[in-house]
Image (cartoon, rainbow, N blue to C red; front, side, top):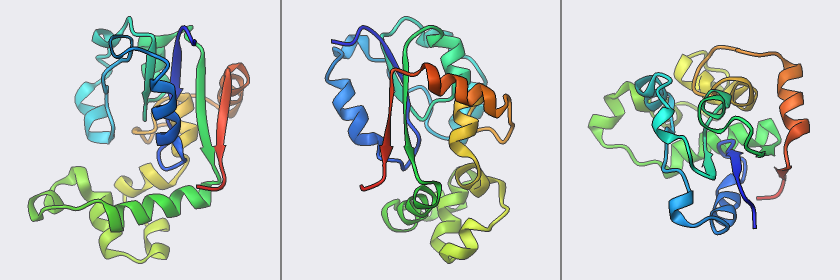
Length: 176
């Protein structure tokens, strides 16, 4: 049984099944509760992650910033998907699966979802709205080097490659 693991769950890349399987390796008290799951929660948390230290299993749409704060030294893993397929999956998920109330549709937190419901796929993926760009442009790279929920590029490609080289394993989702 694994002693510790930090899983960088890349959104819409087949990671939910991986999280489900990995979670079974750790008792509930060893699993960290959800830290954040979107840009709004990331901004609200504002780097205050200390309360989440001390768990053996972390999994979520978390970035290297959270790893640095709570899991430094814990073995890591991630999931990958062909970027075009991942972005199409994001669009389809937002457009067809996420249901929004009228109030949520006006909330900036759900702007990318609202745009996916109104725009064609072509218009969505080429949209320069910052809420959409977080999901469509280099999300996994930013996640592995800083935070996928921040538009900032905090480290370079060599840092991302070095992290991946040190990972216990990674999962590549090519066939959902």
